Image 1 (cartoon, helix red, strand yellow):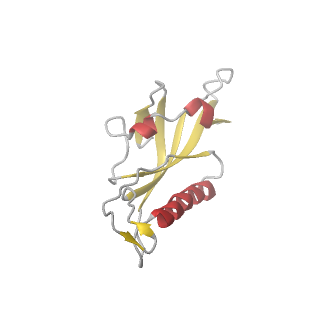
Image 2 (cartoon, rainbow, N blue to C red):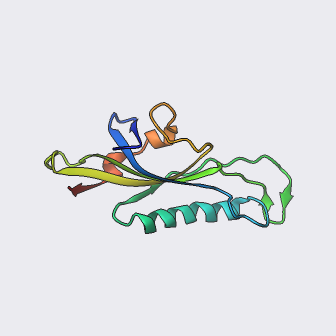
Length: 143
């Protein structure tokens, strides 16, 4: 059973089979969101994805960054990432057309940030999710 299905821009259908969500700035006790902190948030999300799902390649989607306050503090201007950090495991048919479609599938782990805690699906999937170059990034495996 999948959590949702997304049709990529290429026309390929992928299924979301696992999803981990967390608040982007949960646990931040001091300071303010700035480029330095956000770069660490992005790289930390990627490391968590690689550690948790080492069986598959991980693809990071660069997050949007907002600048709500032009006043610069000690670490530069305020820079805000979307409020929800996500790691999703996606699956689809095998990439290699030579493989037996019954015995093989492909998988890819994706790390991204989004504004709401909604499960991405065709209706609300971020365009960056839909633009994933599945055939170049995903890994085939045998069932």
